[in-house]
Image (tube, rainbow, N blue to C red; front, side, top):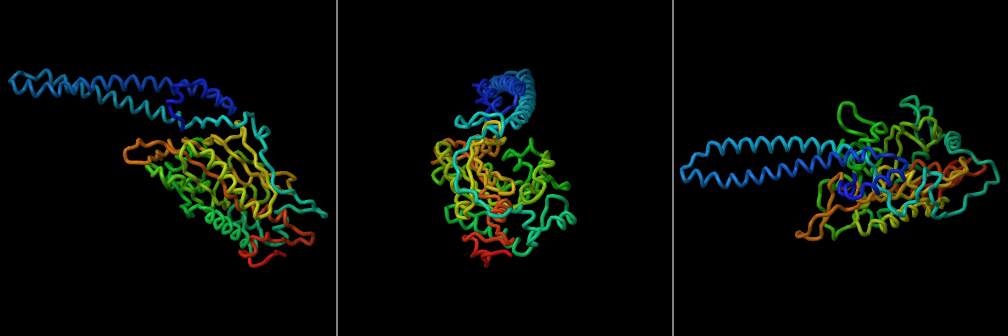
Length: 423
């Protein structure tokens, strides 16, 4: 969440940043400032009363020793104590109200983020690879999967519901091959592999910004206050929650495979066919913990690390910088990597790489210091898909299809597949 000091010292800047996100939060920001002013006024009164209490605490033993009557002073002490207790209760109430509002205010976009109303004003940074020209009519991956009997949505709908798939035979092996290839590649690039829990508690979801705003998008266990994770970013970033880490060891670099679960609330009618928008999907996530002064350099390197696997797979893609109107809730700056999909005749997101600044770290109280004498400071968190596995499989099926209906396996996956073709 945002630092209340930032809002207090420059409310106009914060309001402008929210308007650049196409959000009018002026009333909410004014409200949090009003609550903050009341909270600080009460804290000042409480401190004044504590000073008086301390003075009396020193005075009473002297008076008692000299034999003077301290009945009135003891009564005054009780009144002071009750007053301080009342102030503390009020302060606690104000702090909760303030925190609730701060949790609902998104991050401030970095100055380098293009200002725009939505995804139509995202800025293309680069393109890599050239989309393939087919000398036959290419098929969509959902038709390829059905024809090769490697993807089955009909039976998945029977046992679960829509937006689920059975992967079968070499389809299942291809999904597993992509996961292992991604983990091996990122591990060799200095990321420590993590296999996280696929369920987290409410505090973990709140820490990374999924709650409270996006609770309707989450799958919640009805008998427990646990959530199925929407991304490995949630458990992996929360690994260091409420810790002070050694700043000399930063950056920390983690890669994690997980199944991901998203209700996709509000996406009715979008990408209903195929693997693009599923309620359950696999993903390899990259997470970094960085010193603040290095975090934007780390964002550039994280994005290139995510790009590396697509280059090795020889899939055409492009990188775009999201505009303020398309930026995620917790992000200060995001690059989307979009892979070419012939059936859509356009690029589709396959990875999203973001610098959250200290926004998540403040929620989770993750700090660093270089020596024991240093004051602990908030670090910066970053994450990015490294990359979405189901969408990779979809891209492979479409970009590597042959006229006879077979699929040529990208060379880097042959060792994982044990074959160079699906037919």
